[in-house]
Every structure is written in structure tokens, then in C-alpha cells.
Image (cartoon, rainbow, N blue to C red; front, side, top):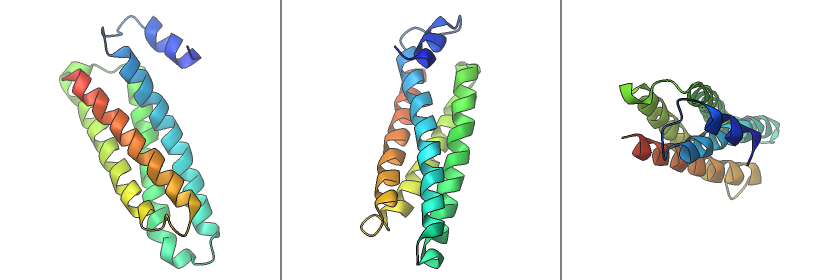
Length: 134
């Protein structure tokens, strides 16, 4: 088990049956944020940078939302008040938006292909956690 997993399972507010989905979402958000920042940087280094500005912006927006979601999840903010669900839904939407943008460039740019895939996986992890919380 990862150190993060150990910390989440050791938390006194770990709701039964949800801990694994929280861990998966936290890790997916962290990875997605990092991948999106790398993709944005790579977009800015491509020869046709003007065509990739929207992609880079979407990457950075997604990275910011993923980082925020990750921080909210590890704080174990009260899941029952709907706030966490709203944050997770916003994250999934940001990931979907970024994935769609990156998919437009995926054939020409490997970093966009990888980013789109990671964004789709993060959106799925966020939605899985939403389903476990309701």
C-alpha cells in the first residue's frame, strides 16, 4: 500500500467502503495535474504554438482544478454536505474539457494523446467517487 493509502486509511473519518475510491481519485488528480502542466509546457514549445494556445490554457485550467480537488479530498472535508461531490463533478468536467481539446491534437502531438488519456482516467475516478458518496 502506498504511503498516501496508509494515511487515508489511518484517518479517523474514513467512511467504510469509500477509502479506496478516495485514494484512487486523489492519485488520479495528482497525476492528471502533473501531466497537464507538462502538456501545456510542451504545447508552448511546438512550432505551431498559435494553434495550441487553447490547448495549453485548457491544460492549465485542468491542472489547477485537479490540484484543488486533490487537496479537498485529502482534507476529508465533510462528504455528506455535497461540497465534495460538487468539487469532484467540477474536476470531472474540467478533465473532460481538457481531454476533448487534447484529442483534437493527439495525432500530431504525443503529449496531447497521453494527456487526453490521463484526463479521461481522472474524470472516471472522480465520477466513481461521486457514485460511492451518494
